Image (cartoon, rainbow, N blue to C red; front, side):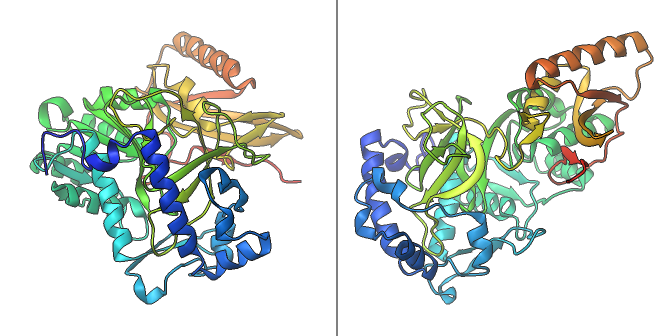
Length: 437
């Protein structure tokens, strides 16, 4: 391992576009043949009147039907597997609160490749074996815990599997163990800083933190910069999902200008979520992924429901793997209010432009007198502000900015700090209480 190299895997990370496409074509053909061991895909191809031989180039990928979360639930638990279950060593699943969970199987090779991908991501942003990596993600069925754990170990860092919650213990570990790299979801990173302030801890003076890995929640650039300023770190955006393996799918490089998605693992498409037709590079659409480096449960043209776009141009870091913009939300999380399409991240972006408010907010949708309306609750940074004139002016400024962004005038409530419920997991940003007709 060359500690001076910018690359964890130079062979794959320095491929040019022609090299990437050639490798993808080879791996796609191998994956398609392997998928015929899956009863689900064998039947899907037969019903669609296509064969593996019909997919000669990457441009033929559109001939294959999409795979969806519903397909994974309908074939629960192992119906899409391409290997016998006794060849697998691990499974992860979603919570399944609205029906059967989605289950993903892994062979030992899958786990090894997953660890390599995460290690590649962490190396890219400057992590080295001399670092101490603390993981505040939940372990168990959630992939963020074990995914980062094995990736950090593969890289050679001392790892602290702190798991989720217990902020005082998290801070004790950060101080006592000399943590330099922390993995946390954005809302929890903000919460940790609040606890630091309560405990009189200055992250710049009292800790060795320098790198923060954030993901799992859609967040705006304004939120990222605010977190960096609070903790005195560089915060790098991470994208992953359990259906693809977990973390390690795409990651920012030090340029922080988009997430490199590892195209030796995935083929990327961006489609219009309504028409399902491809959109031009640079236009926002739904991310569709095909795995080409998985053994137990490869997925073909999987609709992630995440909204993003391919960023044009080359990255100064020297990697030619395409870059995705930060996730703008999910196609199934879009709010439709008074005929206007709104994403929560649009509201967050505006709120974070006002230094007087904290990172905690809640969007509530209600039906009043047969009209749907929106209320945005946001906490102030200070416990209480007695200057009502200042509060009134601040409220008007925020409402005006929100109206300009989302084309709907919301009701705004400025709340004392600590008013909104705290969560150690993903923050709840939207509560839809509208009448269903």
